[in-house]
Amino acid sequence: MINRIARHRNFLLIVSVAIMLVIKIPHLGYPFSWDEAWSYYLAILKMAETGPTMLPGSIDISNSRGHPLLFYFVMSSWIKLMPGAIFFARIIPLLVSVLILITFHRLVSRHINLLAADLTTLVLSVQSLFLAQASLVLPEMLLTLFLILSLHSFLSGRYILFASWATLMVLTKETRVFFTGVFGLIYIVENIKQNRETTFWIKGMIMAIPLVVYGIFLILHTRAHGAPFFNEHLEYITNEGGRIMSKLRSATSNLATRYGRNTLSAVAIISLIVLAARHRKPGNARFLVISIVLILSLIGFSVINFFTHRYILPVLPLFIAVCISLAVSAFQERKQLAYALTGVVFTTTLIYSVTKMGKIDNDLGYSQYLKVQKELVHWCEANDKYKNEIASGFNMMLALRDPFNGYLTTERGFRVNHLPKTDSIELIIWDSTCMDSERPEGFPEGWEKVFSCRYKKHWGEIYTRYQHN
Image 1 (cartoon, rainbow, N blue to C red):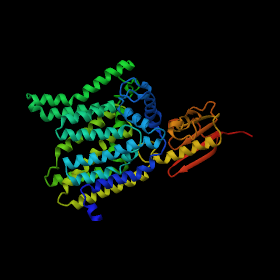
Image 2 (cartoon, rainbow, N blue to C red):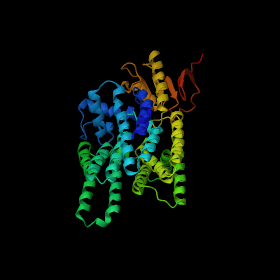
Image 3 (cartoon, one colour):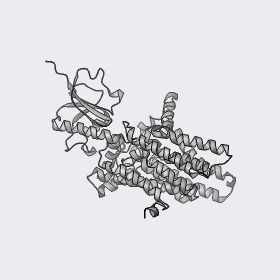
């Protein structure tokens, strides 16, 4: 029986899904943090109150941040059906994560081969960024799914289906409209010799449907809010050299070298050397070239726009597919070597995923600091600090203030300010997620620690003003 299961065509896909579910199901009840807490879930709640819709103006622009409303529509529809618990809200991103593994496996098996699909899906299932986002109420997982489906349709020449998935991608987040443009340019380059044929223009117009839909959204958004874009987002666009280089280093390192992914890059380099030495071309060069173009286009767009680590997620599966498929091509006569190299990548990235703990939502460290922050909130509740003026870091401020985020045991929030402000402050909560810019001048001098807690690599401390005798 075990041998029959192991020989099943989708055995490693099933293993990949199982790994992700074993790690993520315990996280479904965790409270909200960072962008979940102050932006996305708050907007979802607002839309649930007014009624799910995708029309701009249905919720205030300060809540939607000018984004298209598909993600909010899906999530608000779901929580109206399953209200009242964070656990149920997190089921949707978890299901999307399962779909990503399935569709990604299908994409690679169809356009490279089954071995590459098995190995790339297995490696994706233990990536820190993928695992972190797999249960968070944020749009990046949905964007990743739609990009995979768009690429699969494009490579298969199914342009109507491509237009459908790409439209959904654009309606999830406006910045992903550039992916549609990249696909359009690739189509033109590949088919420019047929530019006098009617089918060339018909297919081109079908591929432009997402751009037309986005144009309609901009018109409706302008009518509802008086401007096509959210002004704060426009301020993030930069041509300043230092900031561009900083974001370029961040984007490339998060994709190719951090969290053990340097082993992936090493595998790709070794495989390229072997292929060159044997004068052999990699299998399905079209898939590889288009994937690389999409990866580079996202990095290029990120360095001029606002960038945070999770924005690289949609192309992470493609990067893995490129690296592993090169190994499969280089060692096709010795598949044991391809398995061995993938085993090194799998083990290294899994170790990094469960041991390297950051301060935000791009790795599994969030599962540690949420427990610390929840304990800090409970101390404030147990010691009746509702009338005290409190100052804390950004995420802790959200935890103390908003009952819907899942930290408070009642509907009563605290009077909390964002550090480094300390005027009239009676308590300071300082924890491992605080940024250097949030540290008050001279702190902790003049402050006495009254409580501290720790969970694995994350910690939190509460201070009160030092009382002179």
